[in-house]
Length: 232
Ligand SMILES: C[S@@+](CC[C@H](N)C(=O)[O-])C[C@H]1O[C@@H](n2cnc3c(N)ncnc32)[C@H](O)[C@@H]1O
Image (tube, rainbow, N blue to C red; front, side, top):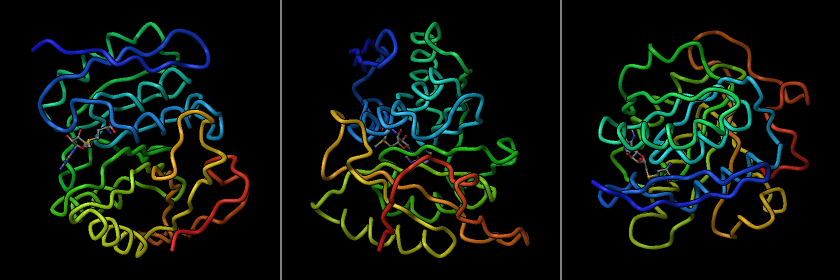
């Protein structure tokens, strides 16, 4: 099926060209993906030669941006998104200074092929339906190590069951993880919006493996952020 291309400008060099399709939710670039991709470009999180895994990558916008910033990226999504991810990887391969590939990863299923834990997990607009909450949390628990930084960007929606889904998700997440909100003034100056949030998420303590909790030192901090706000 033919698509329509979304260009995502970059600070250093030509724009990313992201093919989109009509069809499922993963086939277009969502605003949260734009905000997170452009936040990565601010340089707040060191990405060069870091291992990065993106969950629910959709068109691959965020992870491909990370790969242009030197990261070694694995884009993951359902089987039906693999062809679109492959197209977008090829469209932008000449801009990649790290590496990028795509794999199937369905939340809640076996993640043994994705070890060791990456330095970063990226998630844009992945909190949107109730049945996915437990499987997504299971995947996050199993994929993260003590030093993994999860960057989660989501659009706060006020319609239907969305507020309840978000509330439930963050309640469950905070059992095992520490959440901090990246202040809006540290997002990209242009690609920011009051209703699109970026959180850094780290394991609170070992999730059942006896490893120590991460200490809040600048060396261990995943991103070079100023004051970050706790998430209530
Ligand atoms: C709203 S889209 C966001 C896509 C992309 N991150 C963006 O922001 O442009 C949600 C993505 O999550 C993926 N997804 C939904 N349920 C999933 C599941 N159970 N396992 C893996 N991926 C899933 C969808 O295929 C889709 O690509």
